[in-house]
Length: 459
Image: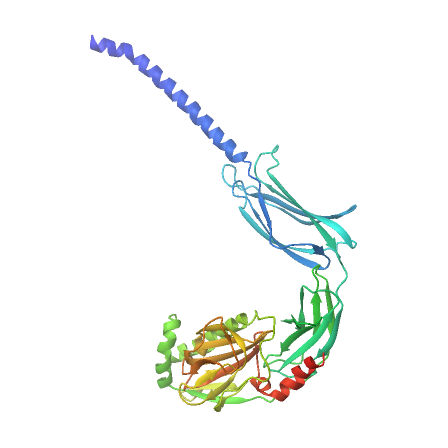
């Protein structure tokens, strides 16, 4: 009897199972379709961020921008410039679809668009930039979500006029100089350019003139081009050339003998900062004297790219009392076990006094670096404004702090043997916009007067 009831109920259970399976399948299909629709027809518009305020166009202006779409991805970016009946497409970038139910294009696109209104044939006056961005959504009849941005601009194709009032007459490798000039309109960027090297200028307080300090590296040849330049907000650049008389300098040579005893004493200090050092004593020394030296000098140049706009210093820079142990720019030959193993250039002046002698600021300036710096050891760098810097290295201790404004002759540290120093001394360097220059000029009041101060007094 029970068996007969089970057989009678079996078709009912089978029918219920099929009905449940069908309902589940339909629900899953509907859910999948809904999810697909949600993904494919998403409604979130792309985000456009212009990373620079743009009001003027003329010469080449670089506009950085970023487009973000977190869902379907970026499909296209179009930028046009229009003025009356004239329209030019400045950028047209499209991306192929990579998928359907996942992100179809890049989530973020960064571009730097070079806009040259003059080359595009636009006249001076009002114009409009139009930015158009679409994503891969099937929304809006499969055209995607759309973001537009319009910017009214003024096209200005007239370059600023640059007039030079003074420019350094004589210059030599490792030497410094200034140019003083006026610009017919407020410049966005200005300074001196020697060949391809740019030396930014700064305004002279209380005057409508600008000053730019410049320098030649110790191994420079005669410049092919020396100009003062100014670029306006529209990207137009005006230039004024000036001539300098290039003077060569005699080469200075020095020989340093490197012993195992010296290396065994110095290398443990460097291992703390450069654990990747390996090999023989000589191989480790050459790693420091070459790769680390280059890294250190590049870092110093980077530090010196940003300077106070106002001049902080006055009169000559002070020289620490003591005996000269090495000069600028000595060509140092390194000898190990009787053989020449390396040649490097010494970019400063070494001064030896008593052990742990007081080091004082050569002139008024802001402390922009106090830390260990490879071959230079414990180092202090002062920014004296308008691109002029001084460097003090091999210190045993600091007596100043980062960010402090120190006065001329104020204590900033004590001499020592940190870094690649064989004995207690100060390594002192002067730099102009990151280029090592001869400290002798900056220690000389007569040079300061003739080449800088007298010119400024006559303005």
